[in-house]
Length: 160
Image (cartoon, rainbow, N blue to C red; front, side):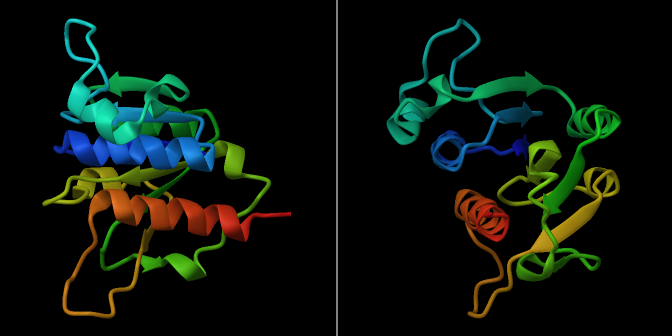
């Protein structure tokens, strides 16, 4: 499984996603748009990032890319299934989305910006959209928390 992070603003959220990704065995993370990388433009480590990631960025392949849509298109051309985590009219509950262990090596999860989520042009490129049901008064979870729930849900349901 790989991940695409669309315009996530918080370096702490990205660091947390890296740490969760390492624990879950994610193969690669695409940092799309304005999503901050573990290193700055001069190649220096970002202390705020590594404080949260605890060095997970050293064990996961990652790449900064300008366009989420173009990256999804490239992945789909390579045979990946792409799933977005977003509350949308066409989304299905995470628990009811069928995940195949045979396809997990060619599976990409897209998560979005903390405020705006994923835009329509990104959602239109995805094969599926899932959401985590909300039972309280809040309408959403922190992006790093939601990412962790989603990734581990997929992994648990594909155990042999």
